[in-house]
Image (tube, rainbow, N blue to C red; front, side, top):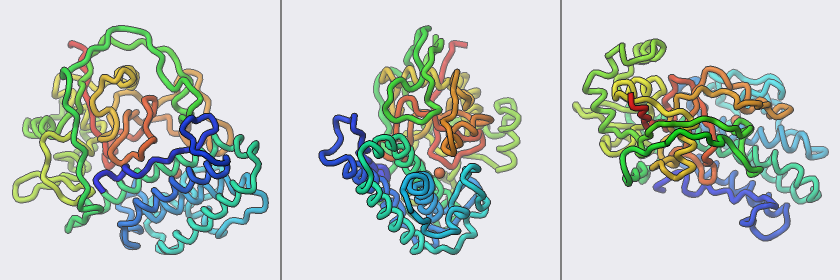
Length: 418
Ligand SMILES: [Fe+2]
């Protein structure tokens, strides 16, 4: 494969969708469900049982755990709540595979997911098959009215599993990057080629724009309410920052110059001994990067990847520029003005991950999905090379802590003329 996301399209069924395939609602939902489920297994297929167990840091989870957790999600929130008479596959699995849903009961410690040698990968496969069959049976035995009412929940389930599909790749890459003999997830994988076109900078004149999701098509709750915001004047870089530009920052002593850094960032850089982006290794005096295809030479023209917010903030200061806000990014992306807004690296913005005006989390356990994380994190916009197809939106708000850099994260710059 050349792109892990290439086969990830879900064709998520919606009665309102013009592109919905023919057939009954149950069939369409079943097709969409199995498409997502198969993509998870397609991504896990190159991984041995040993690969699937490793947890290389507390923020990363074993592939086996991801495969089981997304299955628990269907069992907990669809079958358990809506399928009459459904009995859970195993009484311990809710404890093992609940991630952070306090409303759904106690759970195993996140940092100890790699200790779960049992159940084995084969047992997780059996669990997945059991739940797959139960969900299809449920679709086939449930009225269209009830299924229609469940579509919002189903869409959350589809999108939730897609999020874990991306994490499976970033987490195994982090694990492989710790291995002295750098394994390849897929030796045929290639970093996507960047787009170079148009002027280097685009101008957003001052204006009031609507920010956030405006229709009833699928979106996460954190993308609403749509609201008006003053944006500009600002110039945004049309292109992503490249490895060539990042190397210039490194060679200019960017990682050592305290005045470029936020205090917490400089402390993180010292603590974690950052001298280069994540997954870079110096081999015989040359920088190389650990990729899904194993260790590769640095492509100077490729967008820089695996950089934290702290590093991006320092880079922007060194450049005499800034990071954009998420509103500026959204206005420019909506106008089709950004090269590689989607599909290579998530782009850090300097916007705090906070509630939009009037935001309320949805009711019930799924209200824990996004809202409770709205503190101390930064928004990233766009999508990455590992994001499944049809999981990208111009209003999508990803979020990570400022020291995180194991995701496929990069940046573009903003210029306010000062
Ligand atoms: Fe999850």
